[in-house]
Image (cartoon, rainbow, N blue to C red; front, side):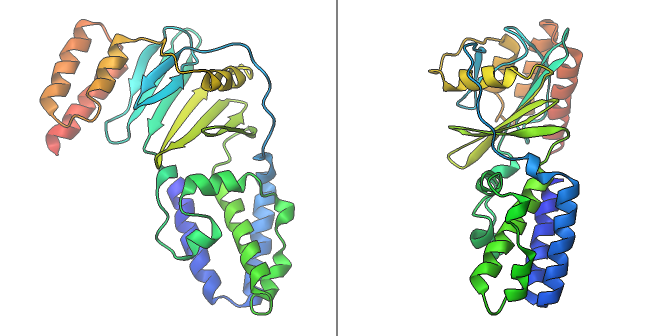
Length: 280
């Protein structure tokens, strides 16, 4: 979905360089109607509520990530070593948290020379900027001024581009977005997503929870001095070999976790990684 929007973005920008001013106005008006129908303005900045509570933190991929489900969540499932995605589940409450690094946000946008002038150099920075743009900022009339007032044309082209990008990231039942020192958090009725960027590598932590205060406890944990208080033997073992491409090492891990009575879904995931590494 996210890649399809970027692909659409390329075609839109390419079209814009050739289209007539009337075509551009019509395209803008159609886009504005679509954006209004999906309530794109819901994704705007909202304030942080104070919280005194803290979650335990996990050290993974040189990051300190708060763990929401409980103090000892089980490793329910993790994806494969290509996507670097871990998942934690508290099986009684069914709270789920996933941690993914090297995500699409850190991709450098080099496919089209208009990217840097319209939305920035990567999707992460563009998405952050888009949260400050509202639908009312977009003036479709400026597309009639492509030749006579190029600055107004480019500014509104940028607004449209950012609004379209933001619309693609609008999750179901979204309630807003909160800025934090490491990036931003998108909140919804289903939970929240914490997006951070360090050294051009982005990490997304998704938390599915029906407790709206969890996000503020999460933020409070982010703001505290790093203290790794979450320990899980299975998770630590998985993380320790995450970048290893040897099927033998993963088979040894599988044997170890079978003896530790790890969840079946975790064992199945590791078997999938072994099959993938063996075939490659």
